[in-house]
Length: 249
Image 1 (tube, one colour):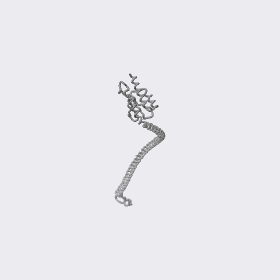
Image 2 (tube, rainbow, N blue to C red):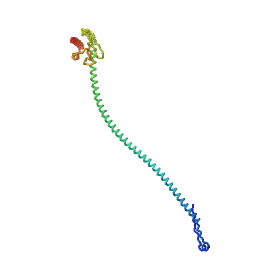
Image 3 (tube, rainbow, N blue to C red):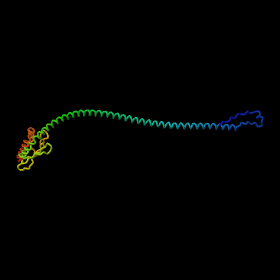
Image 4 (tube, rainbow, N blue to C red):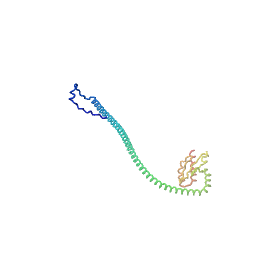
C-alpha cells in the first residue's frame, strides 16, 4: 500500500494576521493519518522481514537437521565399514594362518607319502622274495607229498603192522597233524592214556602235545627230523612211556 505525500501549502501570513483571531491550519489529522500509515507500513515491513527470517531459520534448521542425520548415517556406515574391515582383516589373517598350516600339512603328507612309497617298494621287494621262497617251499612240499603218496600204498600194511606190534592207533585229527595213542603201556591200567600229537605240516616235524609229558621227547623229535623215520620215532616214544611208568612205581 503506497502512502500519499502531504505537500505543504503556502501560508499567507499577512492575511492570517489580518484576521481577528488568527489561526494556522496545521492539518494534524492528515499528518496523523500519514504517520499511522507510515508506522503501519514500517510494521508490515518488519513483520514480513521477521516472517522471512523465521522461514529461513526454519529452513536452515531443517537443513541442519537433515545434514546432521546424514552425517550421523554416514558416521554409522563408516563405523560399520571399519568394523567389517577389522573383521575382514582378522578373517584374512586366519585364512593366511590356515593356509600356512595347510601347506605345512601338505608338505608333511607328501613326505609321509614318499616314505610310504619307499616302504611299499621295499615291501614289494620282500614280497617277491617271500613269493620266491614260498614257491620253492611249495615245490619241495609237493615233492615230499608226491613221495609220501607214492609210498602210501606200501605204508598201509606197514602201518597196520606197526599199530599191532606197538599197540597204538594213528589218526589224522587236523590238517597235517597225527594223533598217536598207545594202549597196554601201563600193565596195571591198560586203558590209561599215553599219546602225542605230531605236526608234519613243515619240513621240521614238531610234537604239539604229549600225555603224559616226556622229558626226552625233544631229543626224539630232533632225531626224527634227521632220520625222517616216523615209525622208529613212534617206537622210541612208546619205550619212553613204558620207562616212565616203571620209574613211577
